[in-house]
Length: 330
Image (tube, rainbow, N blue to C red):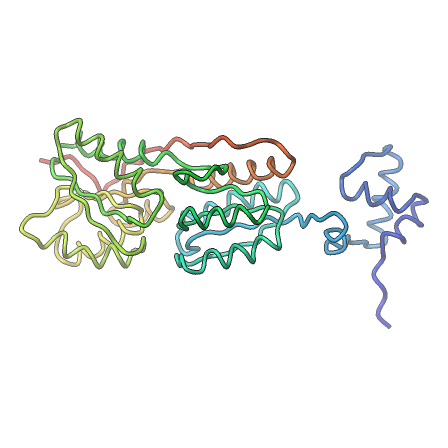
């Protein structure tokens, strides 16, 4: 006959205290004398008691679970965001429930609505229109957004993409590049900031920016558009890509077409994903502190759950990592 799992009643009876005392101690709601806490801990260990999280959540209304919605789990930038968020969650006694929207804007609202019913709060990276973001806010759960919308008042965590674009363009100009292009992803909330930073720098040097766009921020798109950029009447001296995946796809195809990098064109990206240092040539990139973004977003959300006002945006400063894919123009 299967042995019945011990209950909080069993722990209380064995420890000689009330059920309320055991519950408050195990849930961290109240501290007791060292002797009482030690007795309860020993009984819990001896009986092999495990708290029933479902029952607890039904009583308290808390799940101790945070929902994280990202755009593409295959993109190492988002993997790092989740890693940073999870590190903080584990330290604070929370678990993550992850949703990958797979860069499918049509599914985002439905997935977020379902996710919001199962968690205490949400960390969201999204390309949804602001009208849909407002609908998610209406779910009544605390939310932290990765990236800043234009007009929706919501706590945000972001990296300074404009500053990152300026730094990258300044680096290329200092290397002697005169013809610089940007390979962007217009559907992204972050695209305009990066492009504006590049343009601001180039205008200060009397240079113009060539702009190209892709349908998705994947390596395959960088590979697809490469021939259109490189096989025209003239190609740029340098190309800044919306992210590292686009840059890596572009470099692969450019090399297969017979172009040297950086001999024929310097290439750079954003995110500084781990693979950036291992491709050949290694990729110059703007480090947006992806893990730090996840950590900051989780800390901000947990503060919101305790009732603290956290309406101010938190902005991470980017860092330029120079590698072999860019070089001085001769």
